Length: 177
Image (tube, rainbow, N blue to C red; front, side, top):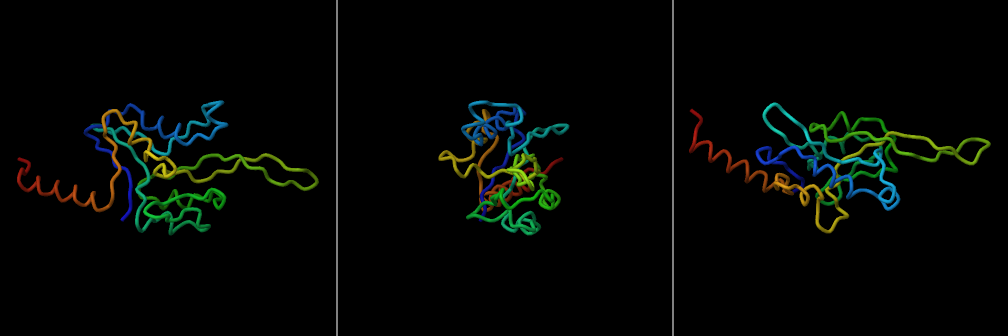
């Protein structure tokens, strides 16, 4: 069973607090001391539809298409999550295409590359970027903790199946007219 976050669009007000919490939770010490716009990189996105607002982020699929598609194994299952190993990624975008939720993006990552007859040179390389469920945070996902309306919650496949069953049950007792 995998864990993932899910957003109830009926409660989401589109305030972007979840994005801010996510970006701040993933800043390293150097970035935090000199916060710049390019270091603001949330791993989820608030999306606005005609009638609803919600988020899109990694569902940490049990049989994840991105993990299967990644030629370098930069995406891998760790416990009940899908995690990213940046050192293995070379920015081929295969995972971006494979993800059915549109939850993987590319960000520019600064790298030092050896240059012949020189010490090294700075370079920018695109790498995959996705939700990691804040596995290093004791309180769990920052987006869940920060959401002012509790629209985002951490769930498992089993509890999602239970929610779906309850929704179907309600629908059979209260059919639309």
